[in-house]
Image 1 (cartoon, helix red, strand yellow):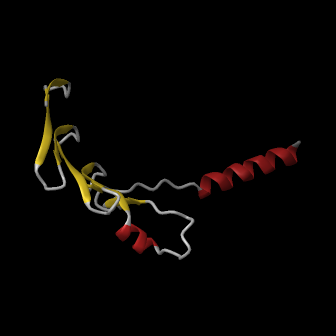
Image 2 (cartoon, helix red, strand yellow; image 1 turned 180 degrees about the vertical axis):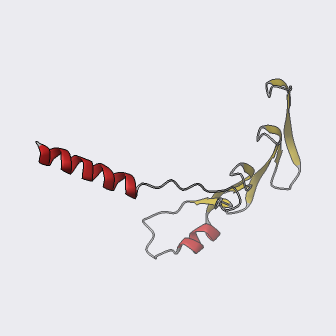
Length: 127
């Protein structure tokens, strides 16, 4: 019985001595800058590198700010040309205040404006 208690105490001591808490400051945090999504057929006879797939058949690209919030979203046609681009405008609290959507000619298709009150509650949405 004494041996079990000693072993348990030793194990707990080892566990607590190996546990460390590491905090990462905002300045040192590594943020994702962008994400590309692409598709290709696995039935292709030739091997495709990651770089070639992203060049030849992109589907979408997401661009993030330093806080990890999506600020731009690009969708592509099957031929690799831009289908539409969405730009998000965020307030200091990270809430979406305006979204602009552009077509492949970079002409504004539509936009959405969201207004908040002092409690960060949505007051109105204008399309």
